[in-house]
Length: 185
Image 1 (cartoon, one colour):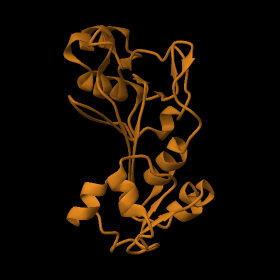
Image 2 (cartoon, rainbow, N blue to C red):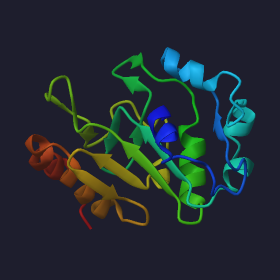
Image 3 (spheres, one colour):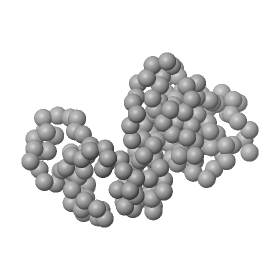
Image 4 (cartoon, helix red, strand yellow):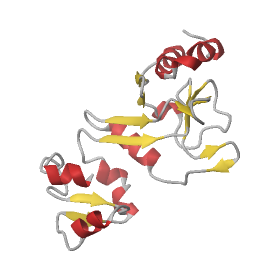
């Protein structure tokens, strides 16, 4: 983000709230980031009661939320917390951001993930989530992105979702996913 801010690509001038200011809940990075943040009036840290508030976020038009996931099943259910029996994520703001972005004027909720894990041996687009929905319900799914493209899920039937998600899975897993897919209507 710092490169984008310093280049002027992110300037916060068009926001209807907190104009000209980057708002964050926490900073994790390099000495360069911390030096940039130190006593910088164009960067403010605020609590999650502000940064995750639907009332605050809902004031932002063209709001885009980008989250990651462990896996997405063919119906659009999103697991961003559990691998097998191990919790790798925590309760966070993914659902808050996804729901507000999907409801925002010209907004989008994006889930971005690589198509595979374990050196390409495991698909992260799966027929059915083995661990269930941990982050968002399928009704919250909007756009899912892998290195093979974008699956637009909002307003789509289960069959349309399955086809769109299989199309962005790694090619080695597409046929298997389509054969295991829910009814493709």
